[in-house]
Length: 96
Image (cartoon, rainbow, N blue to C red; front, side, top):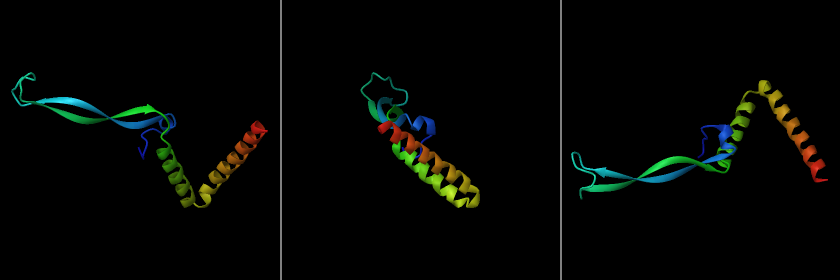
């Protein structure tokens, strides 16, 4: 859940653990015999909803990596800052 496998999918789907019952029979025995056991096995699935924790971790890691780049990362940081300012202006227009 913390590290999404796909960032685009993480924006729309979230990872969840589901459980499936599996029949375990002893070697050489029939499944219908009395010597069988049921085992609850965890299975990873995707469900509707955002993986917010994974997106936040990615954003923080990306920001730290940009800061570590120094002057080379400064241009991209300025781009995201300008993009944020433009988005806030659009939101203020819509809310007005």
